[in-house]
Image (tube, rainbow, N blue to C red):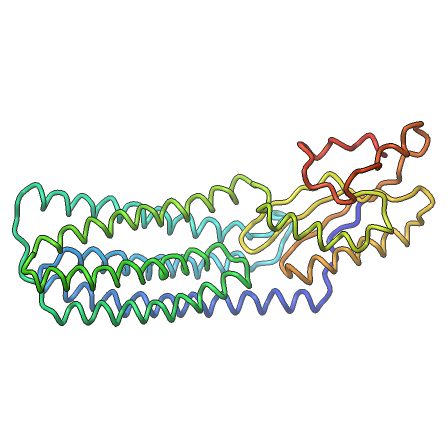
Length: 334
């Protein structure tokens, strides 16, 4: 007997609120990226500073990527339908993937420019000290915005907002490092420091791309939820343990902010349909209280007491099984 996903109006309202918060976060990211990028690119081209051009390109790409992310959030927020019965949550992962590849290609391009300049022996221009002051101010600005975005990413569980927050967080270190490096180059009259800093920016971009694309890969390949979240799921279900025999066949995955959770709920044979139904909804409500965008499906099964060894099946075994090698390991119980 399978009980489908039960969603009360309050849960739908929470999801709508979650979507609005994520959209607002992307708007903030776009405004922050574009405003700083314009100034960086203007200063970079006027003063012929490769590090500023590199960071300006990086920041401008973040703004373009943010627009892509905003579109994917709108697409992912659409409700499930007959063609997409599991919803459109993976659009967010797709948007994060596009963003990750943009950063990857930008890092490769910037590294190519910096290495070509070093190999040619071209002497960069002198570095004005006021550029250092601007970069330091930009780092502080990024710090404030990144705190806001990371908080939204954690509360909403959005991989797209997480990608945005990671980008802006790395801007703190990149922009702050550029400020210090350019100041050293300016005071020491070492113009080559500009080219070396541009190369450093490229390395940081490649690291960001790796982190973002790895998370996107996990979602696209339906990798199970992180171990910490699976452990938390077990904690949420444990208080109901006296009312069921065992939970096994656990399958989890993530699509954007949505967590899809399936499990087999084994109960005593004398448990009535209504009792099992009520229990399944109580467990589901506990999970939704933790993750409002979760989709929970439970398969209700009676314990096979006709088997002589049925009393031994649960001895010294956890109530909620999260470490089975495969979902079918305990199918013999029912």
